[in-house]
Length: 350
Image (cartoon, rainbow, N blue to C red; front, side):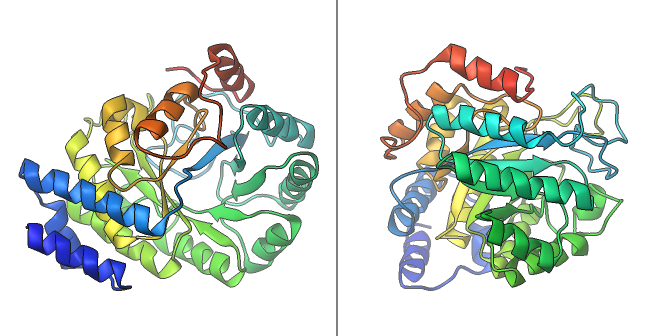
């Protein structure tokens, strides 16, 4: 296995790519020595192709309404009684206020996230005004996760100042019908094509532990390859009460760490970002291990409906993993301000 991993590393370092069957062989590693070698090599690839500075962003849950889709993992679906806070699209001033609060903490990128498949024309215009206001009154980069978009909408968002658009595949094409029935996987691929055609940076990843197989997780990584995502967020299911997956058993942490490392072999230049669910599926030590084993970024200051690690803990994790945090959120740890952020963006602390 040592020679196999070394040969793959050399191939990737010289511009080559890993094959599906090779990725599966890595994912099936069972012995401790090979496991740690896999993580170490993934870190070597990260160090070769990615900046020393971690890729961090914070989310603004700009619309938490009754989404008509039936994604089995989602607390914002109208199909389930989950008790999350519901509200229509926030105002421009509210979005700007939240962005400024993140900027005060040192966060450099904010992502506007809206529930639902497609924004109405009125909502879309309001999102454009949000982007304009944040770009004008802060120094932050602005990204968006705005549902299904046409090429024309993508181009206008880019021209307004949006840097990057998130459109997660969530899981493999084969497994997708087990998770969503209200739209087809091809709808997500159509939006990905529109993002490419519209000339904007792509953020796309998925969620582990939806009930998929190991092979499904590796398939998803390869299905992402044609789109060359700049950012690849990895979520791990945090089962939400009221959803069909509320009783899903937790995934083996070692399996999570292995998969993150294999994703780095498949996507050597992407910013692989640990996102929702990391704090309930991985210990702090395991999160640090993931950051030394292929990941090079985090979503910080909470998620859409749940709070994550305190900001100061994430800064410690990043420093322990060897990342340069000097230009990112301060690591001194102001718990009161972290709680203020959670309150401002309507997050549960559980």
